[in-house]
Image (cartoon, rainbow, N blue to C red; front, side, top):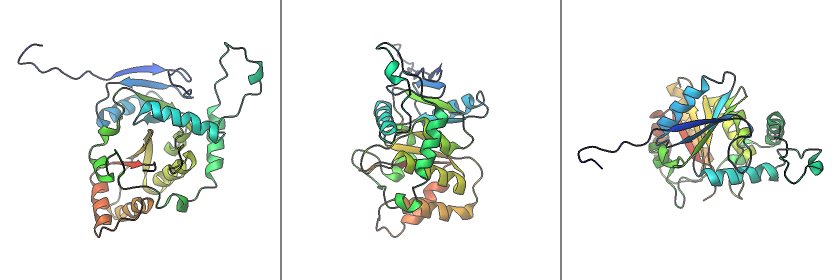
Length: 260
């Protein structure tokens, strides 16, 4: 070490991969980018914006917290909800043969159809304002970079028109008490269609949205009320005002979609 000089943090390293080419336990069906040394949410969004320009007609979806766990739960919830059909010729595969990559369009169709049975009422009063070993709702909005996996992030370029449809690229929500992938899709669709917040990231415990256009101030009350409705009752007289003030201060919204 040379005294008088500060060591600079490593710049993010971004490596492209093809559909099915990422080194994950369960195949990622869309092409994208493997990123390391991403130190902040701002840096992640900058990478996503830059790469989005190279994928016209696609929407970008990133992993957030705890990538190994998120990949584990994604794979299990895909299987548990039968989002990927079993190939007809799977019995004909040899021991060393790789099974064919599932069809993304089929998975999206299955997920959307399954989500058709989910109502907004089913996701009301389900989330927690704080939990064990994780930040409170307000701390999360203040320091969202804290939920980024420090080792690696995967960004997929998903061939869909709407951000909520990217849920099919990395479905998540597996354990009892968590939002299921269908419930997360309903949440994402409502936030996008009603308030203009686009899904851009999901991890093992958190889901992230980004405001994509100017937001009328008079809609903040409705947005704050919806966010409050998702959470368990908290007897604090100025809760709605605190949520509204927090949402007004940022274009981002993060929620912990898991049980305590």
